Image 1 (cartoon, rainbow, N blue to C red):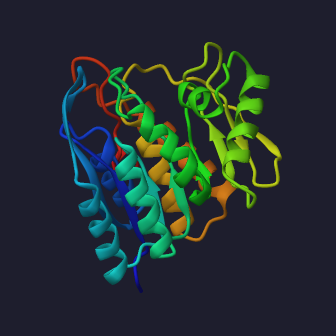
Image 2 (tube, rainbow, N blue to C red; image 1 turned 180 degrees about the vertical axis):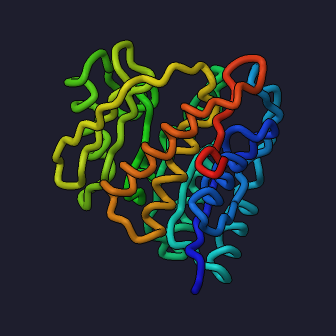
Length: 266
């Protein structure tokens, strides 16, 4: 029996907590086959990002095409896209290979506060990658950038999600606005492709070690889709997996440390 494959298009995190490394761990925890197209190398740890070397856009495109030519992934997760040129290369490649089940995590700022996406890359992401995505998973600061409006409460989350969904194009798409950066609870809003609001209520987990949460969640959603679950079930399963990884805090690093991606096996 073939194992479903999931492709992560993202940057490498040398500390292992986020990016490509977090994606591989998540996909492995779901017992699926991980493939990668690396958009950048980073020198980082839990205290910050100390250097970034972007991959040549043509080489990013070559990685994607090569993966699809042999072991075709059943789902694709897109993470760190540092420049507009890389965003364009990713978009063109995914169109060419007719990729499906695309999960877009618009990574703009690392947990440490370091900026990971140039302004021109945001514009290209909105114009070229959003229309390709089946679901986009911004946190509140990212949703504010994508929607060009402030978010102070749940009504604002809904309004921002609808603006983002409109930007995804006429075919629509799902939007998950993550509430973890909110001042009150940590509730998430899932806006379905039909525009229905689904609130995912849960308590805030008491931990400061949240490095790689966005990467982990988006990869887990892709794993659900690759396994044949529908979108809402994939998001629900991903949230459960992420909660377990946060609750089983390995307490590593000097600042915001990593999750335990293999918590369910310990």
